[in-house]
View 1: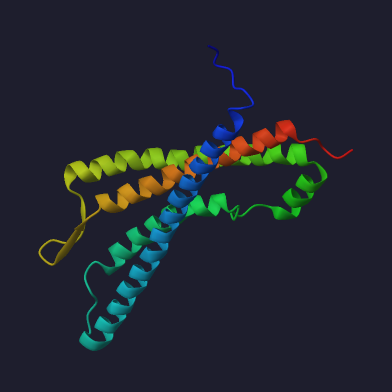
View 2: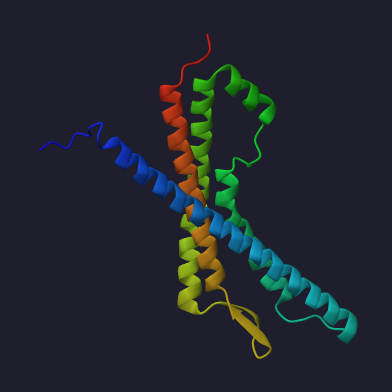
Length: 188
């Protein structure tokens, strides 16, 4: 018995990669959908606060704190889809022309960009682990005791999840780009 892959095994491996890619896409897009739902929740909270200010002359409790945490959570949940769809801001005036003229070098440059993105977003995720642990252990909450409070750890957990998935997405794209850099030939 050998561990070498044969041509007969290739279709099965291709199906496994396709299935894994589809599951990954559903996970990434599912997080983005949850982020979109949170936008709706945030809009409803803001509208309710506006109504309370106009009708009762007072703001609702937790609105500013909840809004701040929701906003960060929304960005982190939608970041992986933004990365996967190649919608991050870049200097396209240079990169697009460079990649068209030199596909191999452009793929390598894109791979480096994605590795740096993975490192930065991974660092954010890593720092969130400690914050989540502190919030969990201390029972950290937002709001005013006796009026309205809400624990912060669920927000931190979703921020950690979103940043971790985004870092992995950057790594997936870096692997794809470096594979393209190795297999593509530049125009002569």
